[in-house]
Length: 376
Image 1 (cartoon, rainbow, N blue to C red):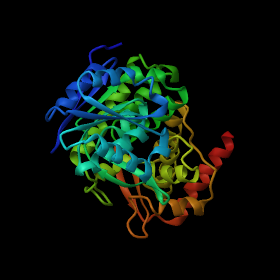
Image 2: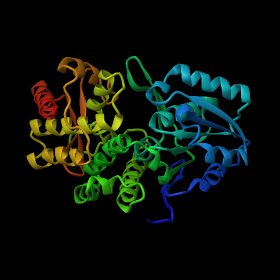
Image 3: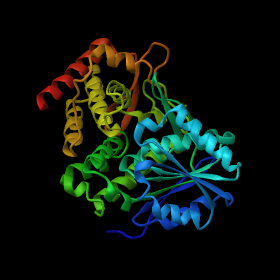
């Protein structure tokens, strides 16, 4: 096991570092001090992680005045009511613009805590300490924050880059196996959109090796996935790059598989793990690209094998076509009444497919349902 931490630097207008390694909690205070030392720190964490957060809490309390904000676990925390409760607590504690927020938890806690930091006094520093594989490779890096509404997932939010991200791989040992597997959904996605080496690692190792939290394979997958996101975000922080046709879609590439994935999550009332939905959505969009004639059979089939190899679902039959299509229509990538999907032309070559033919959508949907039924 490599013991020295890896530091990935995120450039741009508000640069910061992502520290990855085992037992790196001692780096937290240093990340908070970048840009001026705060007096007060708010620690936002779900109620289920109170014991796990003890070392982080202790290190913060030794240096700062700490206000602990306990929120619900999972997607149920990402509401306007929870955000408002956090704002009220910050107000009562007298938080100023020179103070800071630390999030400790999975992707939902990261999204919520980032949104609270982005909106309090129009933005205070935030450092993310992700505790899940999904949060390490996705939510914690890139500055996207958000909460959910009845209309859909993450439709209210803000871009607010963190002051630092601390990926302590030791925390992954506490995760249920199902959550580790779900996190691989975003990892494999990064392989398809940008880094074929990720796919080679997945295809060249047994599942137990890939999920060994002390092993070299998982660490390399985390580092490579974070680097993919860093590279994309630095080039296009606010999704203003390519729109369609033959240009790279910029940050929208990170939403590969998410249009259908978010629709499935909504249909499942957010009870399905995000990484599972992303895996299904990625396989769906590969079938859509196959139907549109822009993706080879071999690469479309590789989606099924790569996601399936790590134990992720590749089919879904829990909602009808019209329900899912309606949910996709309110996806953030849609423009007016036109559906837009990130598709691949080949591995590492994402493009936007705007206004796909309904026949292609139905063909991809039918394949998705048939695959689910075949494995039921």
